[in-house]
Every structure is written in structure tokens, then in C-alpha cells.
Image (cartoon, rainbow, N blue to C red; front, side, top):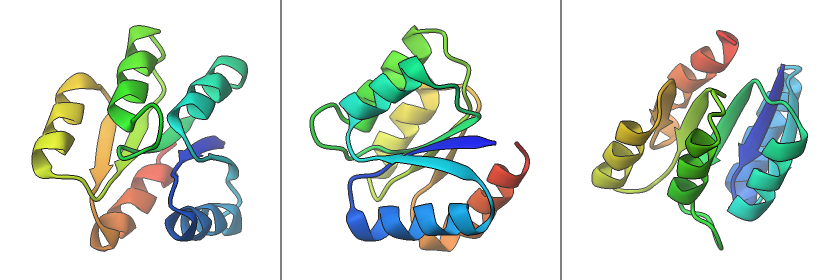
Length: 115
């Protein structure tokens, strides 16, 4: 299973990347939306973990572009954003789960395990 982690915060990204690697997932970590879109054009991913608050092209733009390209990759949104931002993202993407804070991460890991 190959996962694309899109997270600009080094502390959060390092923790998630390390946990995924420890769980034997092949994980590519990118830190902005433009790099994420480029990675999705050149590599097949089984799951995308996407932060909404990214520099350059934000996560909602990335999400919109993924779906506009008819890419059915499952998305797991990781964000500290507001409920309205998360709700907007949820209305735009099929097969998506949202993790808004570390207390929801155990359920998010269970989502990863389903793929």
C-alpha cells in the first residue's frame, strides 16, 4: 500500500510519516499542494492523507483538482481547520474521512488499515 502524506507542519508530518513507516506503509511525504498534485500525476497512491491548510495551493484546491481529474483515490483529511472548512471539503469529495485533531487519529489509523 502506497500513501501520499501532504502536510506542511514538520512536527505533525514527521510524527505521521514515522507512524506510517513503522506500520510498514510505503509513504511519500510532500509539504505543499503543488508538489502533491505533481506526485499524483506520476505515482499511483492507494490513499492520500491531506492537510487543508497548505502553503501555495491549499488543501481544498488540491482536493478539487484530484476530483476534477476523476482520480478516485480515497482521501483522509487531516486538519485543524474550522468545521465549515471541513464540511465544505466533505461535500466536494467522495470516499473521504476527516481527522480534525489527535483525539480522532485512532479511528483514522483504522481507516488506513482498511485499504
